[in-house]
Length: 347
Image (cartoon, rainbow, N blue to C red; front, side):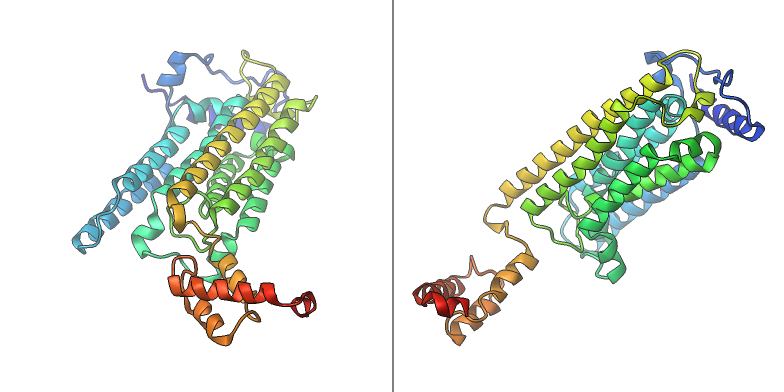
C-alpha cells in the first residue's frame, strides 16, 4: 500500500500556521509509527524526482561518452556509488522518513544525517567532476567555496542554526523552511567532504593526515549539537507541538532522543570516514606525501642551504623522495647545513 499522507499533512501544517491555531489540540492525524507504516507510507516529491532523473541520465551519458572516446574504462564502483547516492536521496525524500520527520524530531534527525553526510559522500565517490572534466575546477570561486576551513565553518553554522536557534520554530510555521533546510544540508555536506573523503578531483589536494584532522574537527560540530539537544531541559521549538500526533514521546523526550541520534550517529559516521581516510593513506604507500603545498614549503625552506647546483636539482624535481639524483642533492644540502656553525644557521 502506497500512502500519500505527507501531502495532506503538509497542507494541514500550513493551514494551522496561517490560521494561528493554538498549540493545544493541533496534533496531526497520522497513524502510529510501526514497521508496517514505516515500509508502506510513501509520498511524492516531483522536483526531487526531476533532479534525480537528470543526475542519473547525465551521469550515465557522460560514462558512455567516455567509453566512446577510447579512454580508460570508468570504474564501476564510481558509477555504483553515484546511483546509490541518488537512491538514498530518493528514499529519504519519499519514504516514511520524510512523512514522520514532520512530526517526530528523532526521525527528522535520521533524514538530516542522510542528507548532510551519507548522500554527499556517496555522490562525491561517484567522481562527477573527474568524469566530466578530468581535472579539478580552478576558478577562484570554487577554490574559495571548497577551502576546508571555510567548509567546516559553513557545516558547523548549518548544524547550529537549524537546531539550536529559532529556525525549528520557522519550520513549524513556514512551509518553505523545511525545503531550505534540506538544500543547506546537501550543499554544506558536499562542500565539506569534497576535498576530504578522497577519489574526486578537488581544488585542494589535502594530505591524508590533514584530512583526518579536519574530519575530527568537523565531528566536534555533531557532538556539540547532539549534546546540546540531549541536555536542554526545555523544548527549543514549542510551536512544533501543533504538528505532533497524539501518540509517541513528549516534545522534550523527542528532542533528547534526536540529540542522541545526532551525537552517536553523526560521530559514528564521521569515525567511519576517518577510518576510510586511514585506509586510503595506507594504500597510497610511498605515494602518500605531505601534499603539494607543504612539499613546496619544504623546498622553499632550503633556498639558502647548500650549493646552487644542488638547490636547482632539488627544486626541479617533481618528487624529491623518489628521484635518486634529487634525493642525493637533498642529502648533501642537509649535510652542509649540519656542518654550519649555529650562528650562520640562524643568520
